Image (cartoon, rainbow over all chains, first blue to last red; front, side, top):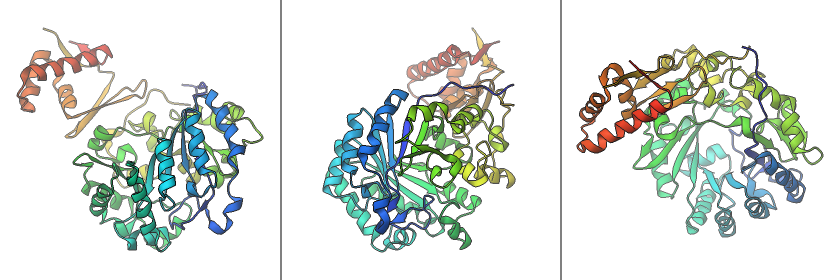
Length: 361
Length: 88
């Protein structure tokens, strides 16, 4: 069957990399932001970026995810949190929580932000080791406390590596006690700064990750526990309870801290995935005409290769993370690394291998 | 009484936690909970819907038979309305 020319889908979500700076020095960060001393050069005034969001509404924009770097380092963050909902946009945020005080918590509440806070271990020893800043754990707990004062619910995100792999039950207890509504476990993979962690044996192998997952429940008295793995590598019970999960890449555009558009956030590191400065170029033009985005729409999911092309979840998982795959192997349609590895190790469930009739030539 | 099988163009997968119905033509996947997956296993062309409902009531030890049968009928109707069943 010939490759189809897909219609341009709505631009549902902008991943807004608010700033390129961070107050932590996380050893696993894939963005690799600079530290505070350089931060004045790593963000743009909100007034220069706001028109991009105003224009994007006509493309179907309905939500914005604020990430970074650490979003609360942007001097206009409170204005951003005020303006985006006023534009009719839902807002989500990923934050390390260390800069949340009463004022910030109130802003999150007023903007009805759904947010997640990174916490990597039940003790300062574990968390600060990965975040690479002494005192980070205490500062994050203080930020969480400010959120609780406002009655906010949030998700805790825990980055899984060797040191905390036996401590997840304690993390579940801690997250519940802190008032979180769920715990999401992200597996640290070799990308950006974490390449060094791999060299030092700090990352878990795929079989180790799957073993950790198998020892964990999916929920604990209603408290949800989510593992960020491709659906084919999750127990079916996880999918029944939490859904298949998809990154929605066909409706997402990254807005980098320098005002450039990109495929999710990798435009920061991969020149080919930098779609140009949206302060000088219309976001409508980029969304409708960028060759990479057009290719993405034509080839994903029907042109996904390898194990992803034969997976029952091909059309919903969409290769799990095409940005990650492109960063790793330079191929948007390549199979997702962990799934390929699972296949090679005989760990990919055969029951999920099917023949798709809709296949790009 | 009519008897049904899942549309043979579809692919059904299951384990103890639930099941999936995959349409190779569209790539769509329907996720089924444990009960729905069990119902699909019972739609083998040998049982009436009433018999399928009885099997579900027994398997899951459902005490309120009226509600249990109603739920089964409703699910079967959803499958039928989506052309996911074939009468034998």
